Amino acid sequence: IGIVGAGPMGASLAAIVGQVVPVVVVCRSPERAADLFRRGVRCSGLIQAAANPIVVRSIHDLAVVGGVSVVFVATKTTAIPEVAAELRPVLDRVGDQPGAPFVVSYQNGIEPGRQLMAMLADLRVLRMVINVGVRARADDGEMEFTLNHPPHVIGCLEQAHVPVCRRIADLLTRAGLHTEYRPDIERSVWAKGVINAATNPVAALVNTAVGEVLSSPSRLIVQRLLTEGMQVAQAEGLDLGPDFIEHAWQVLEEAGFHVPSMVEDIRAGRESEVGQLNRQVIDHARRLGVPTPTHEVIDALIETFDWRTYASGNGHASLPQPGSRGA
Image 1 (cartoon, one colour):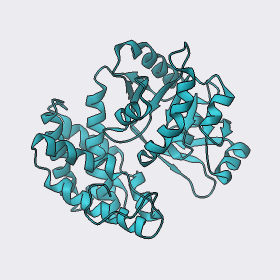
Image 2 (cartoon, one colour):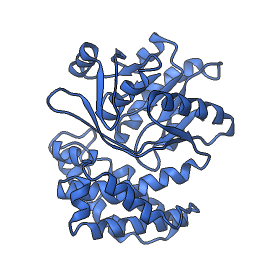
Image 3 (spheres, one colour):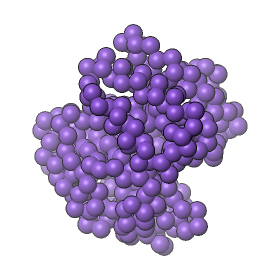
Image 4 (cartoon, rainbow, N blue to C red):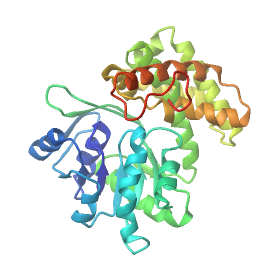
C-alpha cells in the first residue's frame, strides 16, 4: 500500500494498515521523514495501532520501490493538483497493465475523488468516506484518535472496480478500521461533506472543538448550514434521508472533543480546505438555483483567513483579491 501524505490522516492510516500489509509513505519533510523512520507510527485513543512503514521522499519513489497495488492520497485537498501532476507519470508507466495501482481519495470534501480522476485521466480512482478525527500529540508525535464513527465506506463510479473496493474494505476491516463497500458512494460523500461544511468552519471561526460549538449560540449557524446543504444535495438528486439532520447531530455530539483540522489550519496560518467544503456547496447551489446565504457568509469569513495567509507569504499561489471565488 502506498500513502501520499504523512500528516495525521496519512500517518494514522499507515499505522493501521501497516499491521497487515507492507506500507510505503511519501513524506517530503526531511524532519518528519526522519522521525517516521526512527520511531515508526503509533496510534492511541479510540483506535490503537503501530507500524514501521517504508518512508520515501517523492511520489516517483513509489515506482522505484515497486509492488504498490493501491495508492491512498491522504494530503490536504489543496494539494490535489500538485499530487496529481506527480502521480500521473507514475500511473502512465503501467497504464492498463495487470496489477496497475488503484488510487483512493482519502480526503474530505465533495469533489476530490472526481478531481483526482479528471487530473489523472484515470478511472481507477476510488473514493473513501472516513468518519474519524485524528490529531498529532505535541509531546511525542503519537497519533491520537478522538473520533471513530464506523462503518467507514468506499465506493467507485465504475462497476468493474467493485471487487477492488470490496478487497480494500476487507483489508482495512482486518486491520482494525471497519470499512464497507457502498454502491451509493456519492450519497455518503455528500452526507459527510454537508456535515463537515456545517461544522468545521464554524469551529475554526470561534477557535474551539466541536462540542463547544454545539453548546454555544453558534449551534444555530450549524443548523442553518446543515439545512442548506441538505437542500442542495436534494436538488442534485441525492436524498440524504428523512433522518439526516438527526443523524448529523448524533455524529457531531459524538465528536464533542474533536478539533477539526480547519481549526488547526487557521491557528497555524495555513490555507484552509473551505474550497472543498462550503465553496463547493455554494457552486452546486448556484448552478441549481438553490439559495445558500449562510454558506456564503461563512465561506467569505474563512476566505478572509486564507487571504491573510497569502498576504503573509505563506500561501502556495499568487495573492487573491478579497471576495475572489478563487481565493
